[in-house]
Image (cartoon, rainbow, N blue to C red; front, side, top):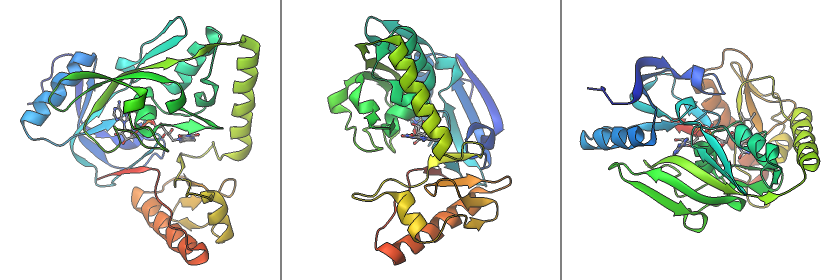
Length: 292
Ligand SMILES: Cc1cc2nc3c(=O)[nH]c(=O)nc-3n(C[C@H](O)[C@H](O)[C@H](O)COP(=O)(O)OP(=O)(O)OC[C@H]3O[C@@H](n4cnc5c(N)ncnc54)[C@H](O)[C@@H]3O)c2cc1C
């Protein structure tokens, strides 16, 4: 039934090994297509059979239910991670890491992608989330995006039609699969590019609890506020449910101190939302995606 051409297929795969939070249950079926055509074929067959599916990139913005996922998970990862540079463009398959794309840009002395070097996502997940940091967003550098539709057709979309806004895109919470993206950069100076990437990496190490599993910022930045400041003002630094804790180093991060479950994290998120609302009247919205 899951005999797809050009795909690695496994059953009962622990998703905690594929998420940076290191929580969650198993995927009933775990499909890793090896070519864009295989991605489209998988989508078409699952759609024809009326099966729901999830699309996994590098799992760095995800919470998976502890009970696991009772439908296929399509992993766009290493099998689809080619990166090539053509002139001022960096063209990446969706499973390539943003860090790999930024490093490729640096090697060719192309500037504009330094901000993405420390974001631990894939190109596909980054496009879907319009990932950004330190004043840059993928929206600023995307030229075009290739994707496959649930019926197995391929399309190319330019940046302006991709509805890229803060941590949101045309692909958010939809069943399309990004298969590649092209970033348009500018000629720069290698030493300056490297210095900028090193500076941003140091700022991350200084501010973020990188030695613990997390999904980065748990909540989106509310208009006119910073989530971390609101959480800190509500006195929530260090608050824990089980091993899920509001980081002491950066209140915007919930971290897994060892054996947290997804349920612990969700429960802590609810407590944080409630306390912040009571203290400041601001409603926090989750940035991390929850699969169940
Ligand atoms: C320590 C840490 C620091 C972080 N810092 C930042 C930061 O500075 N800025 C920032 O924006 N984010 C940050 N993040 C969050 C995360 O890295 C980004 O949201 C990233 O873009 C997610 O990419 P991913 O491949 O891991 O996606 P996943 O977590 O695998 O998936 C996220 C969403 O994208 C969808 N998706 C994934 N791949 C595809 C695809 N090929 N086609 C269609 N949909 C797809 C999924 O279905 C899901 O809805 C951080 C996370 C961590 C752990």
